[in-house]
Length: 163
Image (cartoon, rainbow, N blue to C red; front, side, top):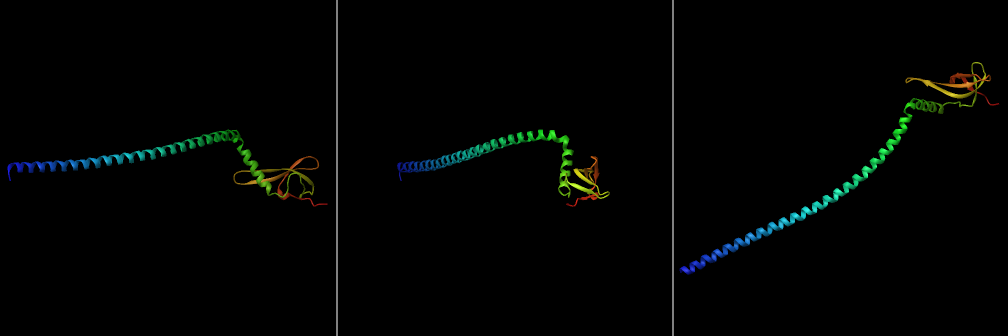
């Protein structure tokens, strides 16, 4: 082999080596750009999904804040009523107790009954419910023929027989 052939052979190997390196580098660069482009598309897709979720959460937040505002208005109006009625709560509790007890009673206001002790006839005008946290009593306030008011326990009176 001559020197010219050897130089041509070395040139050819260099050209092949450089072209191989260029092709490999081109492939690597292509794959890198392709990967970067794919990650950009994925990032944009995730950003869009996050934006949709943020919009959904913002609309939910607006609805909740509107509901909260309405609840505060309702609570404030109820609080005004409760504040007004609060000093009268024991009166309300007593009235509820009286009404609850009155539902189970045999005699009603306006009814004529006989007093067992002297067989006089009286007219019941109202219930009297009293007591404390541990016990209570029920009496009937009644008016006799003279117009005087007296209190009787349920055991002291009986129904007037029908004539």
